[in-house]
View (cartoon, rainbow, N blue to C red):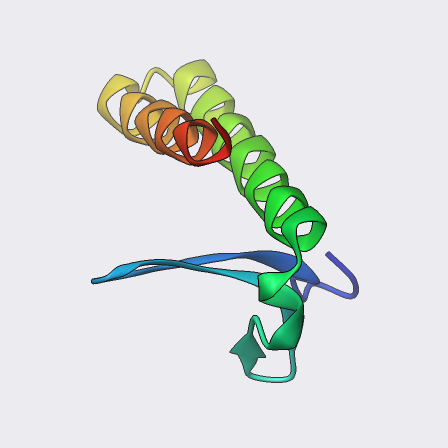
Length: 80
């Protein structure tokens, strides 16, 4: 994040994930084809999902915590 704007990450689309760096209002351009950029984007998404899961768990919002933990695991599976 830079000034509240994501710099790298992913968007979940119907056909799969679009990953890469954010450029204005778009994500992933040529860079999304680079393996390291894809890996970095998934790692950023995994970290974010785990942080949100922990926040919800601390607030005793177990269903929301589980949702974000499941997302983190789904993103991790993309790296395998």
